[in-house]
Length: 105
Image (cartoon, rainbow, N blue to C red; front, top):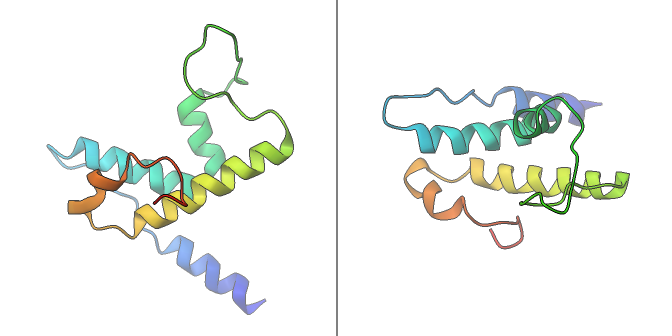
């Protein structure tokens, strides 16, 4: 029971990144990290809209996960990556943001 309150305090202590003039790229990376870390479902709505994703042969980009296991694996991967990126100072974040998975990061 004690560990749940500790983890809740850790997540809630994350501060929402504020947009500053001229820092949009850095802010957008931090927002992605923050949202994938704290509320992955909210990040999915921002990326995909609130409608269910429809995959077609002409659609470019990653194929959305279809099974429950794929969805959980994707969520865990993004949460791990965002957690690691949250610990990188702003001046180095641009170098690491393009890395695609937590293991490589």
